[in-house]
Image (cartoon, rainbow, N blue to C red; front, side, top):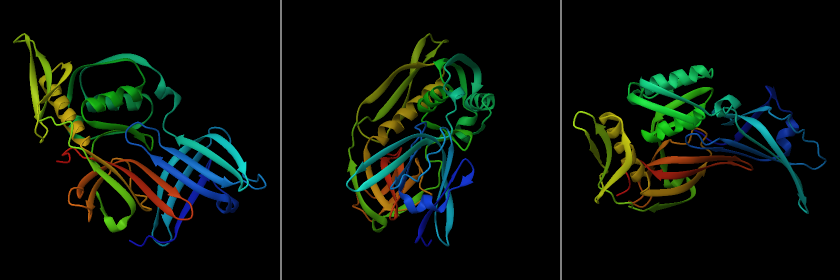
Length: 324
């Protein structure tokens, strides 16, 4: 795919911005976070003459990146929050900042409730519809039964994030939808060393646990039974302190902890020519680096920056298989 002549398109409160916006724009930076971390936007302008109009508080800013003759990608919708002004011998600058438009006030309200004999799909659907959102749940979690789950003075985002962490999933809100997804649900992208402007990798095969174990209380036997999951590494058993209400939930918790430990075995970062389809949690296949660092990785936070050119910076983490 031809990726020359990058461009940016911006609209504020549904209106396409004036051409002067682009001539004064120094840089546009979008940071895409995994899970419930808020995506952010930063626009920096040459403010000589103070002609750039500051949006009204709460205005929606929609940003698209693309390449002439190739296509355009919607990078997100952001709520304008703050403006800052600075000057020095080099001139005057105005910086506008915003956060993803998904976190409405009602999503932050802490309440208490509980769910009996519901699936994760049931819980996500109920909460999404309550707040007027669409929803999507990965198949492996859609029918996973929860014997009893309590929400104690938590916002809906905090509660569903905690539930996702417990089962090794990711919860986020994108495009007015609750997303409760298995890690690695996105299509993988291949990155060759020749695609990279710069980068670094680190492999740290610790903590070295051979298995993880999570307990559940068997009422018939009157005791706690531990379910184990192999990490694929060599070492002792890591036993979780929480006691789960069922065997299935204990198995899922042990598996989630195993995957978390494996993700901690490697990290890195790369900067490449602009790739708007790169998102947080995208699986990455690295080719052409040292043999120890080639193979499967996962994108953590992703930063897209448009200035004199367009580049994408990616924080990397090992995937659930870990780096041996």
